[in-house]
Length: 41
Image 1 (tube, rainbow, N blue to C red):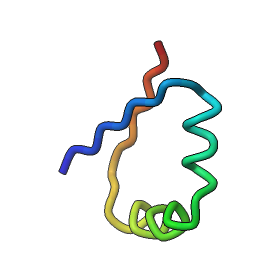
Image 2: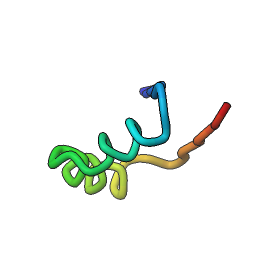
Image 3: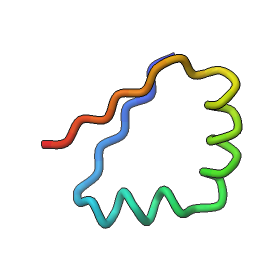
């Protein structure tokens, strides 16, 4: 699976990272994700 996210600003991305569902995603990633790449423009 490939997940791609784009954000208008760093602030928008940080707000998203604080959302409750991100804690669940973090737990899933710890178990199943082998690699993460973050690219900033």
